[in-house]
Length: 140
Image 1 (cartoon, rainbow, N blue to C red):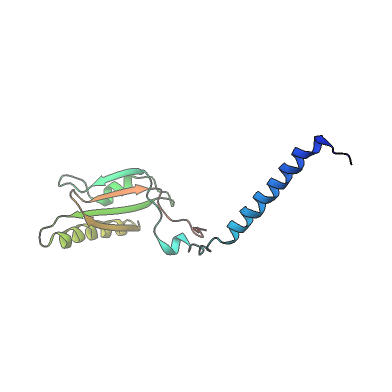
Image 2 (tube, rainbow, N blue to C red):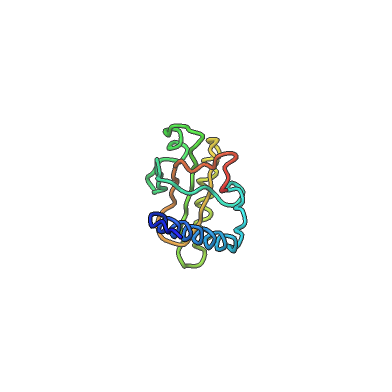
């Protein structure tokens, strides 16, 4: 009987590779199925990006309509109006009223906007950014 010494390590390596493949395949086959994500446009608003331009509704600020006319029109941009409210009684209603007033001014300029009213401090802000959801965008 003749033994060829040059092929022993290659056979062992091939056997180990085959074992590793079988163990990996068995592990992957037992993974739970993750459900497909729904379309991003249907599930949630697009993520917010860096602002291009910010309007702060200060007492001496020009009307939002004037500020919007000065901005370059781009269908990829989204106007987001954010109002903050404190813990005192009626603060949330006042913040909502301020944001609604700016939303009406934006609508008069033909600009659709999303509105966010959240706890916190600070004036009402309007931000233009490339946040507009793309048609047919999906999260899959």
